[in-house]
Image (cartoon, rainbow, N blue to C red; front, top):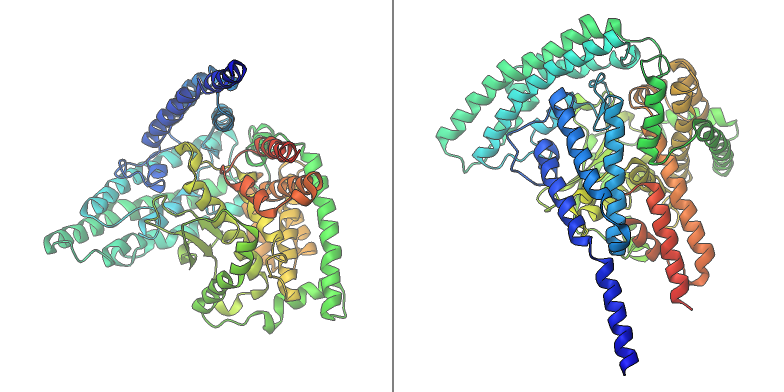
Length: 593
């Protein structure tokens, strides 16, 4: 009896010792997140914290950068004082992710990056660009609420700060010109046409006026009139002049001075920056040559599989002719309206339902919408998933670019839905927001994990009853080819000195795309270095870990369990995911003995 009591006492002492630092970690991460949201009001809005809704951060400003560096340094010092062995296993995971995030931020600041974006190149044509993202928020269809009078007044205050952001951006871009650190001219030529509708239209036709067109009926007539007048005034006196100022600066000063090269090699600090971005997006140091070689191998593998699809369909000519057939034959363009495209996407929900219950135990409570990308964002945009509000008050959104429904190719739709919606980004992001974890982890983003999961979700299509049409499977292969081609052209552009034309040519050799789309993709990679690498690198890691689990667990392997383990703790660096899954596999094996 004494011996049993001694054992129980010993185990309780060990458990108490292990969790000694857990309350300290919880306090550190909680206080960090509060301070971080105070510095990043837009992030706060997206996370459902409305305290700072009348404020707007200028992340490219020197004051913000200094505060950001001080914040990360202070909390990293605090985190480093904790002893991992005195934490619960779950908190050990939290500590690793927290430390990784803060170190990454500080490494970026050291080479003139803020929140993972170059301070001297704050404007480009891609969807990450703040100029178009701000307009999307102002439309009332994004994270910013327009439900109360205060909401409307708060946005007016944010618009005033937006003009300061524009002036700061111009100052930074002028510095970039002097330093020899600019975006490529070919990409920047797309930006003026994106900005033109944002200053050229009268206030009543502006996207920033849309909240007024749907003003709540509960507002008093006096408030409706006041807000209508103030929004018109703000659009005419603040918003339109700010966008016009940026437009004219780009046309008259920046674009003529922008570099003619496509990659970072001849940009000031470009080599160091590309190394950083590989680590940032892949969440682990990787050799560019090995990334390039992986891309070459994957391209060759997928071409063979594409040719097998050509044979299955009975197409008699060669693969390039097959590509031309798929991108031009009328059978692949069945839509007359945008609504028909969106309805087709919506139909996949029901089609996937039986497989979802078979392959996933962990399901998000949140739902999502399917929308066409707004017209002003179409140039330079790609399909994307925007996360909903953590409290469920705003659904996530799967956006697809549909410039002309009659020219929309249907062969990619199933794989795109799997990636952006179910079981891809919607599952991963919604589950992350709903998990029990420190708040910073619910909003954490690691490119290789998130995009890797999206691409991995595409690989599940056949298991989930999709791709029964060989042309939809060709669409899956084309998506896989796109992510593999990216490994080649991204490294080619930023490490090997490829020209824009050489990169475009490589895409067209290996994918059934129009030249316009190939150009759009290459120009994306030109302004967001290494982001395109994250998809394939992340997918390869998840597939590697699944294979390892299947081999080691044998008959004990359940796909539901594996998916639970990948998703239940949210996004994380691949090195941490790798260690976590291997620990889980070992525990499963020991548990069965």
